[in-house]
Image (cartoon, rainbow, N blue to C red; front, side, top):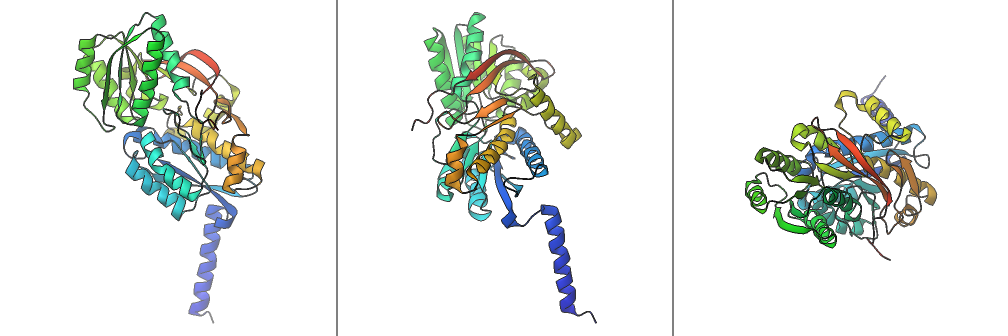
Length: 386
């Protein structure tokens, strides 16, 4: 006779089997990567593409046998694109889910708020966003671009085209101010003049007053450095509607966001370590695999999402070199490994930052980006001296 106890035992066995089939392994046999990113707030325009890049990397790695024979699993958390949300997301991932590593594209406000939690939890953290530079922590590595790699291509191009007067506008936090402080210094070192320097909160949507100041200052070129996707959309749209003739460079716009803006972004110059137009077999294979996995739901791969893909593989390489997921072992290995992917070969071997091949691109009327120039192996400069 089947007893109630035996029925429960059978049900539990079936449930365990289903769980194992779905997850592929028990928690002890898995390596868990936390992905805190701005699914809401300023970065919500681009964060879905970041998650997609991480998902493809993990799928490929698991199909190839995982890392040290263990399957890899993602834990995604919304950081709200800001400090308060990041503290909650990192608390959840580090202290509750006890992830083995953190790999994420985030605003600088989110990163800065999260670093004390990273230090307390002693978790390797690969920061994959382009940013203002000089964020240094025992557990932090960065594989995105910094001002030393991003500013010169745009400013030099504009000056070659005759620009002498520049107007700077950005979001009022670490990224916006840090990126434009470097930009001002670079412009002035080249003999140019900054005729305006204005900032708005990260969540600003009305740029009317600043655009009025631009009109009065009559700059030859405007350099923008706003937070994530949403502020780029509103500022660019309002600038275009104002009919100003100045050249436009944007230090934070990504190709995916440009695609959504279409004609509003036409003529904007950007610098990036990744553009979909990179003519390499590795990039063609990556784009084909992304299309095969996500189909009609694919978000445009871009310079804020592809470093996420690279970073998952860089973490894999570090764990395999160390033969361990122990934080200190992985940290020691991260600056010794490299990965060759859609952006070329990436190594975080320069003061925990990466020399990168950079591209100057121009947004077209359909939102696509045409590559204008290529700059090989650009150094990130002095970032975190030992």
